[in-house]
Image (tube, rainbow, N blue to C red; front, top):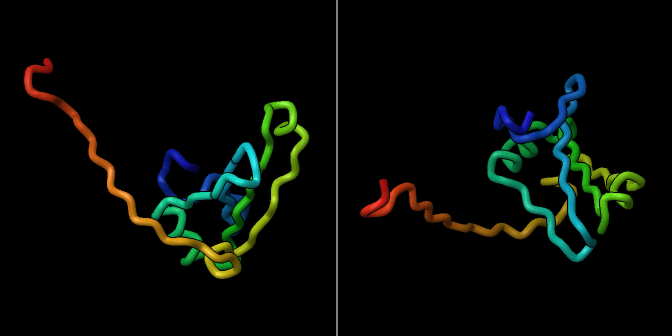
Length: 93
């Protein structure tokens, strides 16, 4: 589903699941603005699944932390970032 830019990765019936991965507990989880909006709109039908594993082998055996309705049940820090993208520079073909 991510290629459709819906705000979640998996659809199962009415439920939507966003899957995130990280190498350690110390790494924060980021939601895109689109994911945040979908979670706020879908409420209890939106679940965040977080896989934490330092290696591929550990990932195969890992069980995700499941967080239903994450925008209402968890504490988030809002960060605004700007991105500058150069598509073509002077003198580039």
